[in-house]
Image (tube, rainbow, N blue to C red; front, side, top):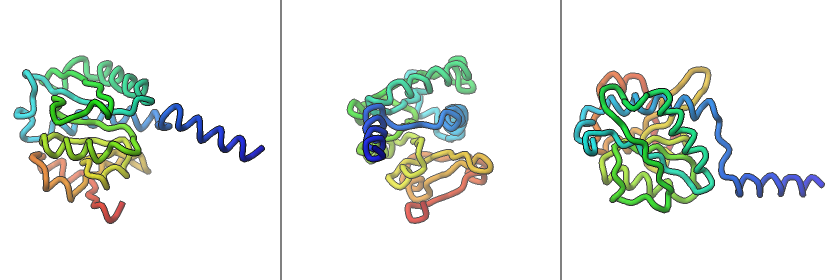
Length: 181
């Protein structure tokens, strides 16, 4: 009986995507757009005068991506500071170098994180990740709720990008590299 229940739980998780922490999703959706504004070269990343915030997801996580989009729209009312924005929901399989984006937020995936990291680097855009473990694969930022809120920055891949942050942000983050995750 225990084996049957365990197998059922595994199959449900596979069928319905990852299990996400709602509080963490909301914290990331609140903070990541503000982090993006600290890029000194943000104006060069505008698309038709707007910030395009791309949320990448597996097909099974479409509902989660839509909920994040609604939360951001509710809290930012069409503007990240003085910049109008557009949220672009893109399934991992549809993401390419031609995808227009100012920043990319990535939900979990077993197979597509390397692709997202490569595209973000090649296009010189900031990449955010739901899961800190994805920083090993080249994404730049993740935020975790520990005793306090901790913003992690992938030090190795920061130096390989066309992104230049204000010094105050670099003083606030906890730097990590792929060896100490």
